[in-house]
Each structure stands twice: as C-alpha cells, then as structure tokens.
Amino acid sequence: MGDTLFQAYTPLIFWTGLGLIIFRFVPKWFPKLLGRCLYWVGIPIELIALGRQGSSSEYQQVISTPFLAPVITIGALTIGLIVSLLVLWLWKNSISSPALNSSSEGSFLLAAILGNTGFVGLAIAPALVDENALNLAVLFSVIHNIVGPFGVGVAIASYFSYSRQQNKWWKILLDILMVPALWAFIIGNLTKQIPLPEVVEFSLQQSVGFVIACAFLLTGIRLSQLQGWKSLKLAFLPAILRVVVIPLIVGIATTFLFNLPNSSRLAMVLMSGMPSAFVGLILAEEYNLDRDLIASSILVSTVLLLFVLPVWVLIFG
Image (cartoon, rainbow, N blue to C red; front, top):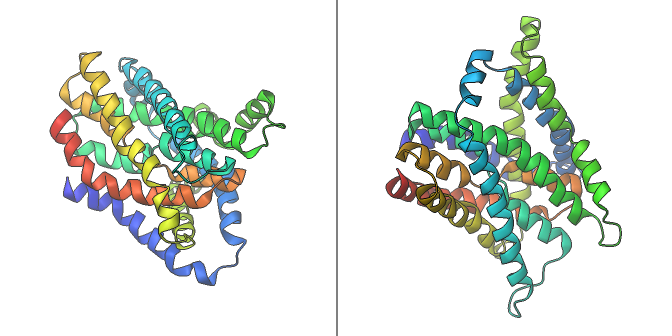
C-alpha cells in the first residue's frame, strides 16, 4: 500500500510544488486563464481520450456488474449534499462562526461533495481490492465524474455564482447542458470503434497526463496565494466531511443494507472518501467562486487521507 500511495502522490507533489514555486513569476491573469483552458479544452480532451480507452468487451465487463455501484454512487453524492447543506446551515446560524458569502458557500459544497475518484481513487484501489471489486470502483468513478462534477457540481457552481434575484432554474439547467466535458465524454464513447491515425490517437492518450499536470500546477499556484491560517481553517470542515464523514456513512450503509463482500464494501468506501477533487478548483475559476477555500480543502483532505486510509482498510477491508 505504501508503494501505491507513493506512485499516486508523486505527480501530485511534484506539479503542485512547481506551482507553489512559480506563482511569483507568472502574470496575475495566468491562473484564471489556465483554469478556463482546462474547463473548456483540457478536461474535454481528457474525457474523449478516456472514453476511447479499452475495448467494447472490457467496457461491457465493467457495466455488466450489478447496478449496485450506480445506486451507491448516486447515494453517496446525495448523502454528501444533504449532510453538507445541513452542516453549512448550522455554520451560518452559529454566532461564533465566521460569516460566509455566496461564493464561499458554493466552494464549501463543491469541496465536501466532489471527490478525486479518477486520479487518486483508481490509482489506490487496485492494490487494495480484488478484480470484481475493482470493476465496481471503476463504475463508481465513471458515474461520479459525470454526475458529480459536471452535473451536481455545475449546478452548485452556477447557483452560487448568480445573485438570488437572478437565479433561475433554467439558467442552471442551461449551464449543465453546455458543459463541454459532458459532450466530450459522449463523443469519446460514441467514436470508440472509429480508428484514428496512430499519431492522433497517441497524442490524445498522452494528453491525459498533461491535463492532470496542469490541474496540479493550478492547485499549487492557488495554494501559494493562500493567506496563512485564515484560509486553511475554513477548509477543515469540508475536508473532514469529504474523507471521514461521507465514507463512514457509506461504509455503515453498505454493511447493513447490502450483502457485499468485504473487498467490494471497501472499494465503495474508498471511492466515496477520496480527497476534494481538483475539478472543484476549475469550476471555482469558471464560475468565480472562492478559490482559496477549494485549494485549501484539496490540501487538507489530501493530507487527511493519508491518516484515514489505513483506518478504512482495517474497519471495512
């Protein structure tokens, strides 16, 4: 498990660290531009590449697993949203808590609900669960990355980016339908059987690593702009919800409601407890939400995962 964590975290540490170093040498407009390029170009290209990966038989093997994974994935997102809204309401009504504006509320929810099931989750899961459970983990990641960031995530970001007077349901729906990543994933799957020139296919697949590196670089730049403890202390609550509370609820639910083998149960707990997603920062850049809170939550939840991961393996493995 130690080697797996090292391999998963090496690119994260390197590119985020580079972002921390170069932030003083890049123009002020660069992080915003990088975030928008990732949202409109980088992530769509990445999803087209991922959609084209694997043969039809491999894809069928994944989606032929019992639809328990979709139920748990949607359930985890729903639980995360309900619990996060409740905690946010309690926070806002607490006299001693610092006031949150609309952009901070949106970032709080994004940080607590959206997990990094793709890069971190699928890098860790193969070393901890068996093949059948890994199929469930893959399906969890696919559903989470479409319904989560580019469904629920865009709806939250859109809602909190507008004033209460301007907020209309049709604006939020239009924002969701216009998400480039959603259409890119569809295009990638529909064109899976269409051969491309070898150089084009190779470049497409290599772009995945480039997009991930840029996402980490953006995170490092935003982390470098944090205002010390003031920025970090607000992140502890959404980070704890993300990697402790939500996976614990999923673990209890899968134990008492579903007759899952230990490995499959652990896979669902792991995927539901991944650290705050980097795409949350990209959404914050696109919809002008609180970047500091998202960046801080990514940092805190990632460090926190190192401590809680052995606990999940011990309890649910």
